[in-house]
Length: 443
Image (cartoon, rainbow, N blue to C red; front, side, top):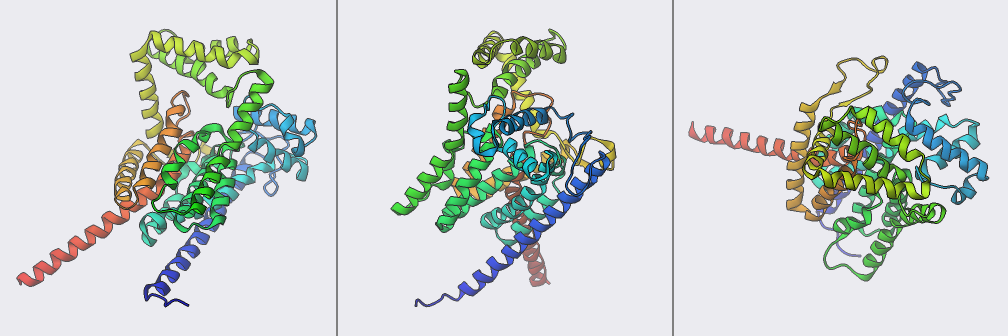
């Protein structure tokens, strides 16, 4: 047996205390998201235990456009023979993760709506992941601050109760990042396997992070590693290509169009272009968007994505600088959109929101936290910055979405903001103590 260093018992106690904190934050997150979910269920006339909403209405029922798309895919899976035959179903508009969860829920309860429970369950895992990231990047105090901020992040509650993928996708993404960093730091194979499963789950929910393999090596890179680490990291990267290959290949075989989702090209043609044209004063955005959607809906699916892309690129080439201003403006709008529990008065007090001013302060703290982290672990800071770009640049093709597509970025950046706040507070305390000590010496 090797001699145990004096710091080892303290390190173990520190890890145990952080593990306990992660459990507490996970349970608190689950309880808070559950309370929000049940309150909204009852407000919308749904049964509050299994959430069997036979006549669901309101923001989380059939009035949400995305829900209709996911329901259509879920019904396709049911008609194809269930989850074991999910590969027979087309995924031209939506990826298979959420529809599969809906089908499993349907098999268990006879209704699709209990899939809402995915939100609180995933929130618990994300809460623990945020605590773990905070500890890894800045220590115990940063972990505490990160856990508190996660529990107070209002827009997470807004989207976790909806029957769509925004919140589960964001929660799964931050868990995948935490597992990947844990693999890098500990080299325990279980973390590599967990990270692979979480990245595939994230991509199954939404195609937003289909390109994660391009930036994940920045997070995983470290010097002087052995062959085992390289092989496991290579397998982890390969796993992130499985879901994109499946969806893109399925669309290529079925429709002759190798795209991740028609949503991306639709947004480019029928949201980004009308937005730019409206800003140039041609016509109201809603009118041009509706005309565009109607026009492309009449085109066969095998030609639709290609024609939407060609139409959009042609419009941007005619107006390059207005296009650049339009995308930059949309990015600014989305980044500084405030957070709130719900846009519907019956779900929250009017004061329960934070506006653009809060987001400006938050992004300043995040940026400073990235610089602090870069001094200790440059790869993690660079990965986080690239993650923001990977999520937000495609999001600028949308319009009228507020902070919705930004949620993975919001949550992943919480530990970095916590690191800066904890570092600044610690330095301020030290400075104050030095000033007091100098004053005592002078007297």
